[in-house]
Every structure is written in C-alpha cells, then in structure tokens.
Image (tube, rainbow, N blue to C red; front, side):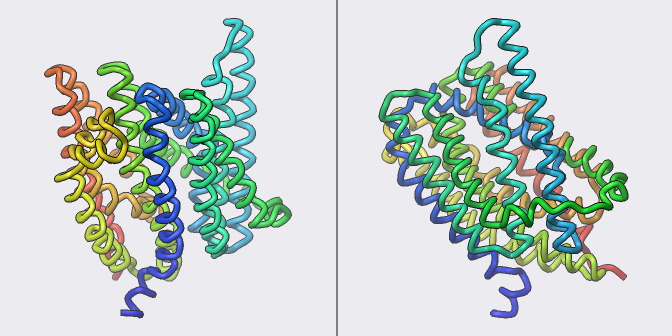
Length: 409
C-alpha cells in the first residue's frame, strides 16, 4: 500500500489537498455570512467580473507557465516562470492603456472596468508561482499560500459586505486577498531566484510558438465554459439565475478546480519524469482517477439527494435554487473531478490540436444545451442537458488520455 501511494505521488497530493481542504472549510464556514451580506445580483456581478478576468489571464501569459512542470531542469523551470511573468506584465500594460482610452472616450468608468487589469494579474501571477513552487517541491510554502488565500479573500469580503459595499465588496475582497497571498508565495520562493534569466530563450521559440497557439486557444475556450455560461445565463435568463449558478459553481465546482489543480501539478511532474525516461504513466492515471471517483461519487450522491435542502438551510431560503442547480450538475461534477487533472497528457504527448478539438466540441455541447433551454423556456432542462452532455464528452476524453499514455513498445 505504501508503494502504491508513493507511485501515484499520493503523499505529495495529500499535503496540498490538506491545505485545499482547510481553505475550503474556511470558504464553507464563511459562506452563510456572505450569502446574507450579499444578494444573488451581487454574486452575479462578481461572477461576471471573475469570469472575464480568468479568460483574460489565460491570454495574458500565453500559458507559458504550463511548461514549468515538464521542464527538465530547475533553471529551465525558473526561465519559463520568468518569461510567463514578463508576458503577463506586457499584456496588462496594454490592457491598462485600453482602460484609460476607454475612459477618455466615454468620460466615466465604474469600478468593474477599472479593476480588470489588476484582476488579471491577481489570477495569472499566482498560477505561475503556484506551478513553480510545486516544481521546486516547496510544498510547505504552497500549503501556507493556499490557506492564506482563503482566509484573506473570504475575510475581506465579509468585512466589505458588513459595510454594504455590494458587488464591489466581493471584487475588492477577492483582489486584495489574492495579492496578499501572492506576495507571500512570490517572496517565499525567492525574488532573486525567480529573477534569473537564461540566455538561450530564442532557441526555444519554435516550441513556445506551437505551445502558445494551441494551449492558449484551448485555455481561453476552457475558461469560456465558465465565463460564457455566466454571461449567457445573465443575458438569456436574468441576473438572479446567473447569481444562483455562480454560487453553485463557487461552492461545488471551485473546490473541484482547486483539487484538480493540485493533482494536475503533482502528477504532471511525475508523468513528465516517466515520459522523459520513455516509460508508461497509464497506471498513474488509472489509480489516481479511481481514488478521485470514489471521493467525488459519495459527495455527488449527497448533493443529488439533499442539495436544495442543504443550500436552503446553510445559506438561507433565497438560495434554494442554487441547491437545485447543484443537483443538476452533480453528474458533470463527478466526471470533471476525475478527468480534468489529466489534461497534461495532451501537452506531454504534443497532441494539443486534438485537445483543442475536444474543447471546442465541449463548448458547442454546452452552448447548444443552454440555447435549447431558452427555446423550451426552461433553465432546468438547459442545465440537465449541460451536465449530461459535458459528462459524456469528458468520458470520451478520458479514454483518449488512457490511449495516449499506454505502454510503449
């Protein structure tokens, strides 16, 4: 058993998962306060802001940071982190200029638009140093960072909500909390160490170009699955429905994303080592996916049976619909939890073009089910179709990952 856990890197995953769990306990403990301090419309506006900046954050770094886990040396990993950071600052500088020009054109700006460049940095930079810290095996630092992020974001949101700041309070709480934990992570790694430059960057340009074109495009489309859903729900069904959906995502899908990222980071490092040694890592995927399935299936059954009652009791009667939405999305939750951590397979095997096709197909399925829901005037049918359709795409994609990672002759 100990050998099994070592093979699938379970001890390293458990350390980061522990921090993620503590962070989520903080999120769940503060959620009843937040749901009473802010309305569903406040959460809808924050959801629109958040969904926009996570999409822009992908474009801002060209996903160069995703080359960090597969780098062969520490110096190369630091090099990728440094250039991802440079690309980010160039992008946000241009974005800031655009915001200023927009202000000069219309003569006024709200806080939502003004804070978009800062929001992009608040999402993209932690991703860079998060991946770098695990590559350097600074797991204790990463654990502290994850807990600090949840304390900062949720604590400040409650504080601003107490002063009736509405959606602006959620936005400011998120940004300030992210930056506080980012500085902790950034300087915990070492400012001088990350500032180191490698002179042979031009030699890597061809690889980077291929990576950027397909992985950045795929990343933008993947984030559009959240941002596009929130924006479409806001337009097609109304702000209240979008707010209910965002609360569902925040309480169910966000933990999935965090745990998936944890598994992604650790397993990507291990799979890269095996890949460089020309060994199969299919067993790594199968065993890890099995454990993830057991964890997620039990939770999904509870949500499916008692979701509406739990949300109403925990957050207040106004949030019963979020529990109903969670029930509909429970099938998608299981498959997304089990499959998404292994998206690194396409990067390792240089199959980004096919991965992009899968992502586009998934987006079409999601968009089609939402539009069909509008056609029949039922958000319930829209989300049920959304969940089942996306789950089927993920199941097919998992089979493809297993095929790519099969033993080599």
